[in-house]
Image (cartoon, rainbow, N blue to C red; front, side, top):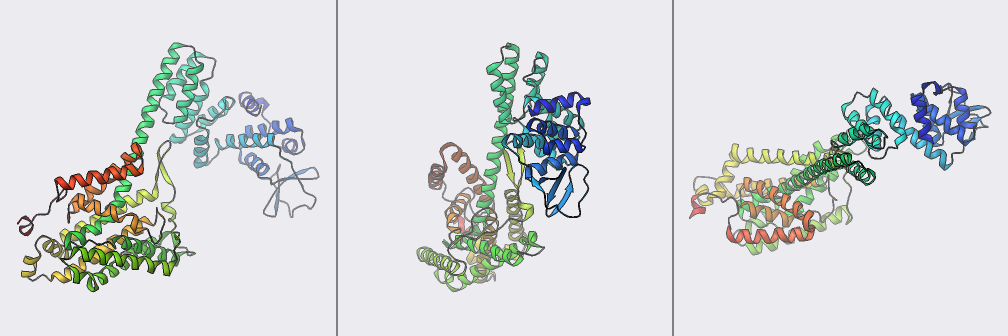
Amino acid sequence: MRMLIIAALLVFPSLVFSQDAKTVEKLAFGESDEKVEAIAALVAAGDEKSAAVLQAMADGDLYTSGKRVLIVKDDAATDAATGGKLAKVPEDKEDITVNNRLRRELNGALAALKLISPKVEVRHAAAKELLGRAEPAMLPLVKKALGKESNPDVKAMLEQIAAALELKAEDRATRLAAVRKLASSNNSSTKTLLLSFLGSEKDEELRAEAQKSVRAIEGSVAWGERLGVVFTSVSLGSILLLAALGLAITYGLMGVINMAHGELIMLGAYSTYVVQNLFKGSAYFDWYLLAAVPAAFIVPALVGMALERSVIRWLYGRPLETLLATWGISLILIQAVRTLFGAANVQVENPAFMSGGVEAFTGVVLPWSRVVIIGFALFVLLLVYLLLNKTRLGLFVRGVTQNREMAACVGVSTARIDTWAFGLGSGIAGLAGCALSQIDNVGPNLGQNYIVDSFMVVVLGGVGQLAGTVYAALGLGFANKLLEAWQGAVLAKIAVLIFIVFFIQKRPQGMFALKGRAIES
């Protein structure tokens, strides 16, 4: 009934009620049908005062005091009819009872009013909400909003809504035009609407056009799903790249199987947590990552350099002892974090600019946190590339990697380079922890979830090869996500592991082999 009244008011302007005392009084004191008519009149008025009155009634903020109707909120009273403010809230104010029928009418009225809101974000949200859910009687209101709409995105959605409503029109040409219009939709609910139309439509030409539109929508939805898979694959690949980049340096340079690499990632995440707490409550909280990123690099880097100087240095050339020692160190680091921060996960909040996401297709949302992490991984990769290829330290690192003895003969302090390189790799692991803190739970066992994947990336890409690490991380990201969609997460992991085992059997040096006289000999 509500929608029929609204439609009538829009089609016949002479029936439109102005927002005056009589309309508001009818809303407060009238019988049930009179209240419905008053709601329709306020919707037809289509101004901010009408929306305020209806919203107050829906929120329980509309009261009566004698013959007056008041909006009472935050200990302030406003006359609903005139908008005038009262000096104080009357003591004799009484609630207005809103039953289930009136609440349904109010919800529909408020949704309708949002289509003609002056704020584009409100209109966008209202149009998005009505996609595939609008009632036929709302067509006049949608057309009215469409005629005034200037935003192209909102206008496109309103056109889709209008076309969906016109599917039930009596005129054949109108239904045919609506079917063709809906072919450009990428909303799965529109596909459901067209399938319902196919079940009731007898005209063969219309049915054929509807089937074409369904196939077009299926194609658009499929492309959206593909985009979603590509994005999640790149996102996972960027995380694996950050986690494995530091390991590629330490393992590639010194051949150290560092089982504590995951705990260095965890230290980076907890460093981010500590910095976040220092900024909490301040006006600069949304910028805490500017301080957290250096801290997440420095703390694990110092810990890594200390481990190399005190433990790992004495175990070079003894891989089994190194593996056991670093595994023991990882247990010590986990217990230290549990002692300092507790065994439970800690909460790291996203800054405001990393909250929410962008909707590339209907139902396909790209979270800003993931987008920022992909950009951050590329930035870190660029810095590592410049460090290794454009600086004196990078030259020494590459020289020691390719031929340690010759580098020592020409005056390179290989022991010092080992320390700096281990610190660099540990610091990059900390940056991975900083990134992971924005999308994953931060707890003492955080690093253990990524240590195996990190080693797989390094071995598959080629020990000590930056390009190989990038290709392997992205490749494993795509393989995991594609196989997960096909067989599930567990079988995907098993399939990837089996592939790597067979690949290493055929090509032990990985995708990219190191070059150098010592290596080739």
